[in-house]
Image (cartoon, rainbow, N blue to C red; front, side, top):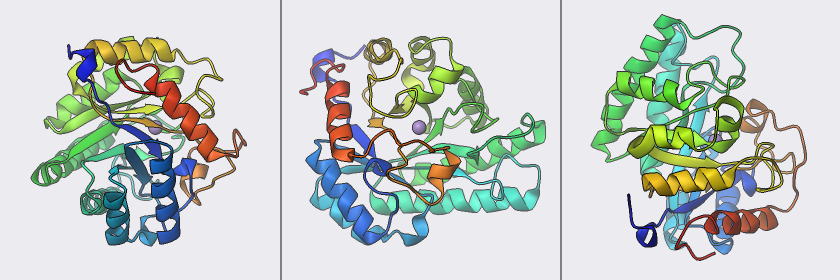
Length: 293
Ligand code: MN
């Protein structure tokens, strides 16, 4: 267990708290506001990466002295958990392109639902689909290792994937992929739906935890819902987790043309991203021993 006084989890915020797109103006705004709200890291979704100017984004991040992490899910027509070879191939290409973008931005973590579309599946995962996930992510992990990067398997709820819904599922998948740089990514929003508690999965994952999303059960203001954040943060301290902790929140006030629909963001839970983000940063810091709030 790490001495609490030396734990320095980078605190991150998802760009959708600020802006819906990843065009040059949006990225500049996201970087400025992330810095102003006191965060260390900006998470960019690569769903709309066609508009992303990676060189300009990297320069803005470096100027602000911010770390970056990238996330994404796949799509039903580009899905490595499919049994259709062409669909798997399109998903594989998206993953390799997104890994390269993350690297070009200076990011060390590429995470998310890297194993399937983000959406409701109408049937369980097939054995062939799972074998495709294992093969593709094994190759992606090897590519990531040459770039000194880690992959995160973000565990999502049953309405957003049929591949991994619990920490136990994710550990089995990571074991089958069998690469040291494949880490587990826990998200309190998804855990609230699928797990028995908010603390036991953290202990189960232990030193294989590589990335964390903090989200309320309705994905709005932290503390307004019913998630046991005290139990979750206590378990993080217990396992000595020192990796990124990123606040994720979505409202119909800030919309991505693709990701917001994939995540079923139909409600307005907030309008003022700065008030939301500064509140969230304080909320998280108060639960991290030694971290100034
Ligand atoms: Mn998440």
